Image 1 (cartoon, rainbow, N blue to C red):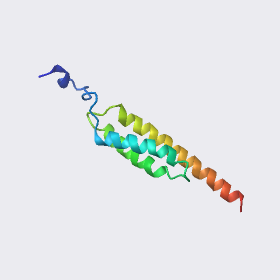
Image 2 (cartoon, rainbow, N blue to C red):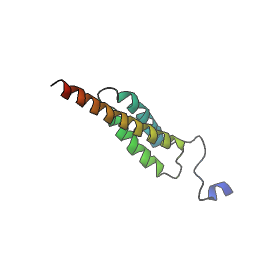
Image 3 (spheres, rainbow, N blue to C red):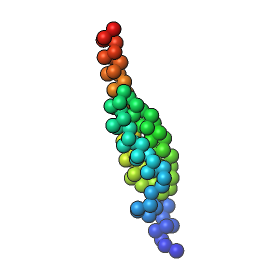
Image 4 (tube, rainbow, N blue to C red):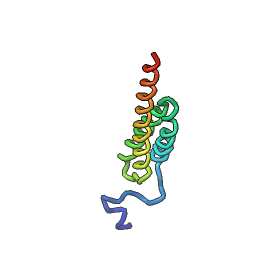
Length: 94
């Protein structure tokens, strides 16, 4: 048996990604351009955030989950800012 797999800090073979990691990255990247559409990016941002947090608990988590988490957070921040700006524009016209 390989000594590498017996190491408790072994994070898995490079190049093997779980479905949660891939989904978190896709939803995270999707949340950034969708945030420009009246804050719609909040929905894929939350989904990507949840998938990334679940993938990070996995023993074979790679950097793809971290990338999905970062992109999801950025998309959610942009969405909140877009909602605030749109709210101010609508209220200023009243």
